[in-house]
Amino acid sequence: MAGIYVHFPFCAAKCIYCDFYSRVRRDWKPYVEALLKELSERSGTFLEKLQGVPPSTLYYGGGTPSLLPSYLLERIAEAVTDTFGGTPPGEFTVEVNPDDITPAKAAELHSMGVNRVSMGVQSFSDEHLKWMRRRHTAAGATAAFDTLRKAGFGNLSLDLIFGFTGLDDGRWAESIDKALGLQPEHISCYQMTGRWANPDEERCRRQYMLLRERLEAAGIRQYEVSNYARPGFESRHNSSYWVREAYLGLGAGAHSFDGDRTRSWNSPDIDAYVGNRPCGEERLSDREVLEEKLMLSLRTVRGLDLAALSGSERGSLKKTTLEELSRAGKLLVDSDSIRIPGEELFVSDWIISRLFPEYTA
Ligand code: SF4
Image 1 (cartoon, rainbow, N blue to C red):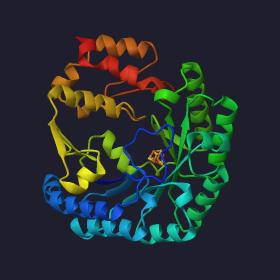
Image 2: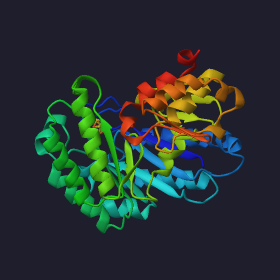
Image 3: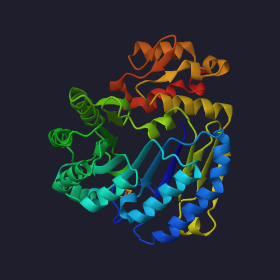
Image 4: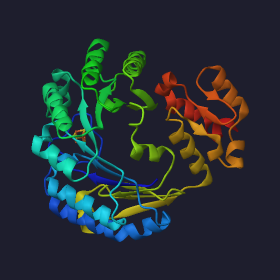
């Protein structure tokens, strides 16, 4: 089922590790007007591609969507619902930062139809939060979580980060346990990349394994390299990316996909977006389509359904490479599917790169 992604590239401050397109500014009214214009201009073509079936998910990401006043967030949600036939999307997620969550904000989000909240916590160590230049404390994140629960949200996700310099296994275990103490339905956990990534790969792997084990023991199962959920609470919106379903991305820097082989994007610049919305588009080659199918599906625990490949795509996967990876315990291969065992998803990029046709020629 198709989805709508809306990007809000505004933040109250920039976190030390963040590469996402976002700016510390608050001139969101013209931005919201530009979003509504883009929705109105692009929705018709998008709906044609969906053959009239309305999108089933709406996702507000950032940046920090929760920084915006609720009436502006609601205007966009209403416009999306009106545009696509009057039925609100089945899953409506908003990313929030803990310091934006007051009882009033939580109630407003709930009453506008948000039914899933993803909260960026990153760590439950105040020392690490300060170093990351996050605006909240561990106690603030706990209080925000409780506020969201009291407002009636039954589907809450927390974001955590591991594998950064300065994170030892003991404090990582504490952060995991504090996250689990809140009993969230979903946890997303990303390994630090770039300048602050810990170069000690063994330590990073240990932290990855610790996370998997503790979450699984608590009934929160891994379903993608960075995502874990109680059964039935997997993110429908994000899951649709991994099976290459269509989505319409609105906002500066947002990407869209037609569900076949056309990808497009808006340039990541707020002023340009509000002005004349420069954008780009590319049509994927056969080879790029195959690479995407491998890269996206093999990130998931479910893996690649071989029925999703054409005959020639299946033929380009060399049997000896599959056997070699399978013997090494990196791949589970049967007649219907190929998947990477959960403990090896930590090195999924390397495993997937071995399957690309240039390695199998
Ligand atoms: S709040 Fe989120 S988007 Fe903004 S700088 Fe921090 S990590 Fe990046």
